[in-house]
Length: 302
Image (cartoon, rainbow, N blue to C red; front, side, top):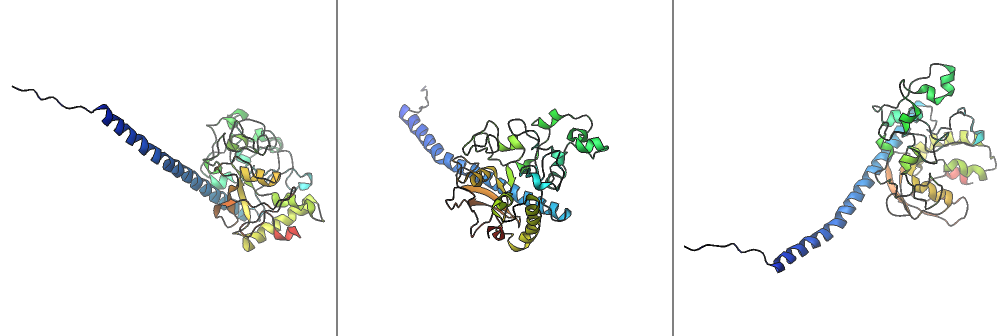
């Protein structure tokens, strides 16, 4: 009677198999990384298109006024003080950091939330007394406090958060440095990844009639015209690193999507795409108007 014994793998065979597996992993990981990056970019651009559509609905309901608000305590229409925020249009309240306070409003007072996220609770109610009109905390839903709004799990508005907006990417709004990398993402720091384009307004400091209220009234009319004349070229929203780019007159070295000269943008016709920044070399007030996109109305450049 004979006993059959199975033949095992030799050491050389095991090493060959391990080498093949390692080689396959090395080939597949970059492809998977690129696929994840492409998915993040697609989600980001989808967000921006939805925000632009929400913005158009807001303008349709609001006599073509733009979704830009001032800090609490300032009456709408009083633009002479110059205090306007380009990140209060939608999203959540900051979870902490240097950008809290008067320039960051609560979710129920961010104008686009009810258009972009109509089914998500915003934590607010209509004011019932004159005191509640002047006090944001008086408009909280009963049972809520200010701490509820900084709870990262309580109020969230995903359309306003880019999946590539992480603490290790650019966060110009917190810290103000061109290459600042914050302990928080832009969404965490100010409540949204995306900024509204008000560069056209501040660009008017070079206009002969340098008056904030007049410039703002003119801008409202220009936006109404732009939706008909330049909708596929005029930038409505952009991601945080692009905000740093034109205020600092040079692109940051760290961005949400990996390239310092590429930014996600949405246009007045509600399409969104990534654009390559073109810079004309000026040290102050660079003109970013190109054949592909506009940040300033051509009429304002005269």
